[in-house]
Image (cartoon, one colour):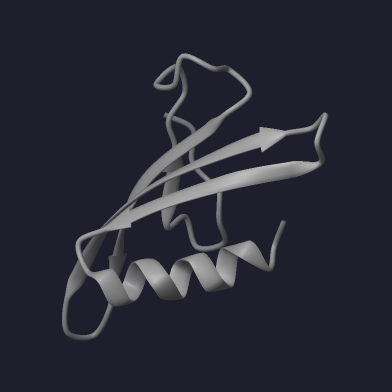
Length: 75
């Protein structure tokens, strides 16, 4: 596994997990004051169409939505 996908090393980049080598897959745990939230993500770039698909799964729905909002602004 390669570290450092996001600031603070919240997510580890998983190499060789997705059959499409152009996709990025990551996993991590977000630690808060009160709880820990597991997180899985996949970024599927389509350079030809200049678009991407971001799939996020966490153990809490509200965290999934917030992360999608934050990450979608980055791409």
